[in-house]
Length: 249
Length: 124
Image (cartoon, rainbow over all chains, first blue to last red):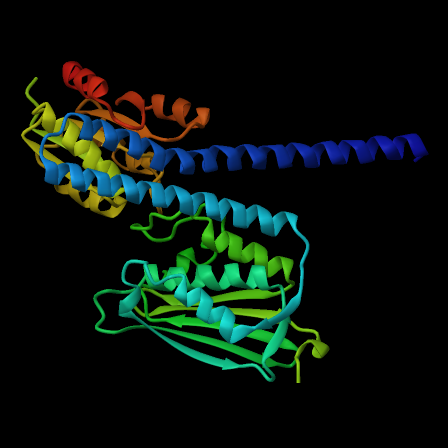
C-alpha cells in the first residue's frame, strides 16, 4: 500500500467514526431536549389550568406542582453539566478529607423527600486524614449514590439504612454504598449504567445519574460493581487505584 | 358518541393531573383511568370490559415504552378504540413510528391544551 492509499483508508475510517459520533450526538440531543421539554411543558399546562381557576386551594396545589416541575428541570440541567464536565475536563487530584466530603454530601440532601427516614451509617477507614483524589468527580459520584439511596428506599420496610464505607487497602480506595431499598432485578443490572435508562417504574429522574457515575469511574480508571435484588436492597462497590504516596501518613 | 372511559398513561404524575383536569373541565367522560406504570396499564387493559374508548399515552415510560404497550395490545386495540400519543419527544422517528399504527388517531405534543381536548372530544 502506498502513502496515498494509506491516507485514503485513514480518512475513510475517520469518516466512519464521525458518522457514528454524529448519530450518538443526534440521540443525545433528542433525548436531552425531551428531558428539558418535559418539565417545561408541565409548567405550561399547569399555568393554563391556573388561568381559569377560581378555587384558591386548587391554585396553591397547581402552583406547588409548577415548583416541582421547575426543580426537576434544574436537576436535569445539573446532570447535563456534570456529564459534560466529566467528559471534557482533565482529572485533577488534590488532598481530600473524605469524612468532610461525605458530611457535605449528606448535608446537601437534607431537603429531599424521605431523607430523614434513611439511617446513614459511616465506616471510613482511611489512614491519615486525607487521600489524594479528584474531589469534584468523587463528590458527584457520592452525591448520586446518596440521592439514589434516599429516592429508592423501600418505604414498606420499617427501617431504611444506607451504609457508606470507604476503605484504603492495597493501593486502592474502595467505596461501598449498601442499602436495603427497593433493589433492582437482575435483568436490569447491565442496563442501569446506560444513558437515559430508568430501571424503576416510578423514577422521575433523567436516567443520567448512574451513566455519569460510570463515566467518572472510567475516567478515574476505577471499577463499578452492583449487587442487588428486588426488595432486598442494592450495594454499589466502586474501586479506584490509588498512588501509594497519596495516602498521607 | 358518548364517552364512558378515558384511559391515561404517563409515568409523570404531574402530567396525569394536567390531563385529567382538562378532560374533566369538558365533562369528556364518565370515568377516567389513570396509570403511572406500564404494569398497572397492562393489568387494567387485560381485564377491562368494556375497553376505554380513548387511550392517551406517553412514549417515554421507564422499563418499557409506549410502543411496546401498543404492540402488546395491537389486536385488541384494532378497530375498537382511538389512541393518542402525547409526548415531549422531538424525534421524527417517533412520529413516523406512531403514525404507522392504524389505531393511532393523533400524535400530540405536550402539554395537552383546551383546544386539543375539544378536538379529541369532537373526533370521537
